[in-house]
Length: 79
Image (cartoon, rainbow, N blue to C red):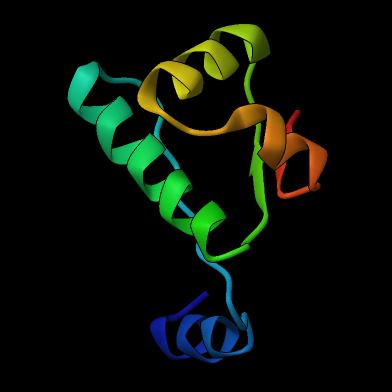
């Protein structure tokens, strides 16, 4: 996909943001969970894919994200 087509596609994604992290340490987690937290505060949906869902939920809670409320209201989805 060339850059002009990417721009056209992204313009159609109203109120959407996407981020991908593969591996990393504390700085990656702070950036990642801060990004997710801001999206949840704006009532944006988060779909998080992982092989370790409980670990991610625990880390999000430690970061200060209200995981239970976000799951209950359907904004946070761990797959």
